[in-house]
Each structure stands twice: as C-alpha cells, then as structure tokens.
Length: 103
Image 1 (cartoon, rainbow, N blue to C red):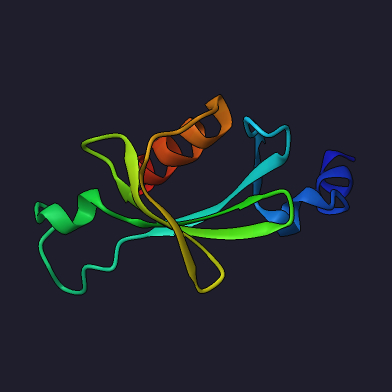
Image 2: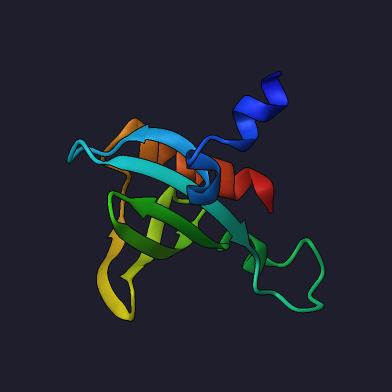
C-alpha cells in the first residue's frame, strides 16, 4: 500500500525533500516556528520565523526575513556562518517560502 511505502521511506526522518542546493547536496525542510510568545499575529515578529533545514550532512538553523526574502542569520551547529543570505537555489528558496507560509 502507499502508506507502507511512505512509512518506510528514509526521507521522512530528515524532513521534506526540497531539491538540490547550488552545491548539489540534498536539501530537506524540517520545520519552522515563530518565537513570538503571546504577541498578536499582526506583530512583525511573525515575519521572522526560526527555520530548520538540512543541506547534505549539515543541520542548519536560520532566521528568515519573510518580507525581504532572505535569511537574516544562518547557523550550522553553534556557529553563525552568514547573514542576510539570499537563496542560491530553488531548493533553498522553497525552504524559505514554505517556512514563511507556515507561520
């Protein structure tokens, strides 16, 4: 059945496959959350969700800027690797769009 096929697919543990990064590595979207506490939904905080995704073997945490279409900060592990990063591939653009639409 389709359910059995889906449940045995290894990609489910990695999140949703989004395509290939500009480096050729696989990109998986692992979710997004607004860290806004009890602020109203209209607050600007909601335009900057925390996003989790994977490129190859690297687990990435990023802060999206949904209004500008960039990642304000990109972290791999505990290291800040870049700021104000525009997506370099369709896969990363899809991660950003999915995260911004999920909040």
